[in-house]
Amino acid sequence: MERGIYITDRDGESYGNFFRSERILYQGRSRYQDILVFDTREAGRVMMLDNIFNVSESMEAFYHEPMAHIPLAMGEGDQEVLIIGGGDFALARQVLKHSFVTGLTLCELDPEILTICRRWFPEWAACESDERLRVRVGDGFDYLDECPEASLDALLIDSTDPYLFESPLISEAFYAKSARALKPGGVMMQIIADFLFYKKTWFEVIPLVAPYFSVLKPLAIPIPFYATGSWGFLLAGKGRTDLDPERVSADYLRSIPGLKTLTPDGVKGWFSLPPYLREEFGDLPGL
Image (cartoon, rainbow, N blue to C red):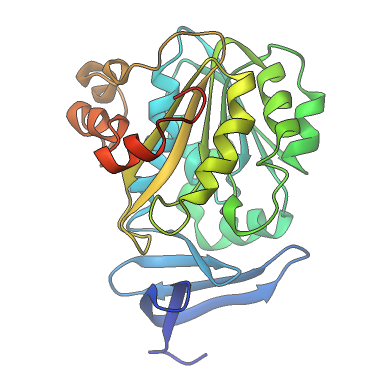
């Protein structure tokens, strides 16, 4: 590809977004997916997986900060954390900003993602030098079987968009394994789907999660990198009665170095679904 080509991520046949590439850095296929890394003028370096924009240098904080810091705020004391996916290291870098995280395992299915991101996103991959981080190549669904029962304080599922295909990470078996590995009071955070084009995914996911978690909170988080400007995440708690956004306090956020996107009031707003979603989700279990 020559410089100046427009690279597009489409949602259906009539909607999407694009970037103008300044330079193609890598293009290839791993065992699992097509991978493209390119530079842009506005968004910095971008990685695309299977023709879907995955991450960009300039906008990654809009995704990775809430993915890390909201669920970790729900815990108490030292925390053991597992990331499933996250091979770009950007989420791990955020998690490791907390001194109360005593151990972090990153389980990435595709070893090519790790290799490519070490080369082309070295600022994120630099967190690999943190002795608390353990990198495991393998299937996160299977890895949960190796986790001792009640051994995790937080499980963060940073996978390829699960709504695009039949994913084992959206299954009753996966949520049963996740709940088994979490301690009482532990939390799970998972990227699910946009509320506009892929709303039906939520009606498939929530009934699968609800039997294993005592409280569920869909979050609508603004992420300008994605075509609709907002994306849906699920925060779930095991054996607890609340997931209170007040825990994401000003003091908590001040303790995080280099924070870019989170404020207490902003987070409270993400926990509050708009009326049309509250009405449509009203009959779903656990909400």
